[in-house]
Image 1 (cartoon, helix red, strand yellow):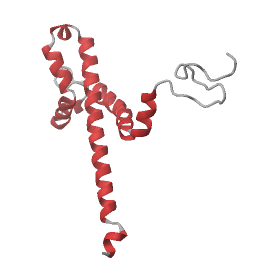
Image 2 (image 1 turned 60 degrees about the vertical axis):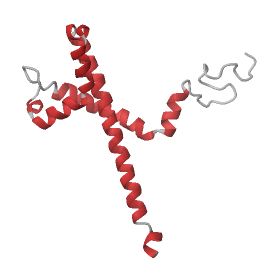
Image 3 (image 1 turned 180 degrees about the horizontal axis):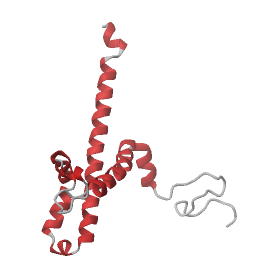
Image 4 (image 1 turned 180 degrees about the vertical axis):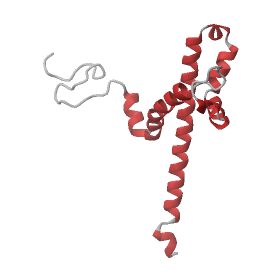
Length: 143
């Protein structure tokens, strides 16, 4: 190359004229800038689902992974978060024959469920924060 701009800037990580990074995927930068709550929910849901799936375990299993899975409230939240995977495993004959695939489907369904719940919690927390900020503004008190 002759030092000019690259013909396809998406394929190159560095610009020829500067050392600035150019994102390969524009989706990553859009999520980072426009949807910080979504990013936080997706990142926080991963360790929560790992704990929920491997530490608490499937509540209906014969040898319980932990005694915590026998608590009715914990078992209920486990079933609600993994409901999509439970339905998929129940409806598919192929999944019922392969325990590893059922585990993967249940983990993914629980991860998505956890992310949705966390996203709703973050949205309601932001809504409450904005409401309290408006209610306690000095302009409202002076009127």
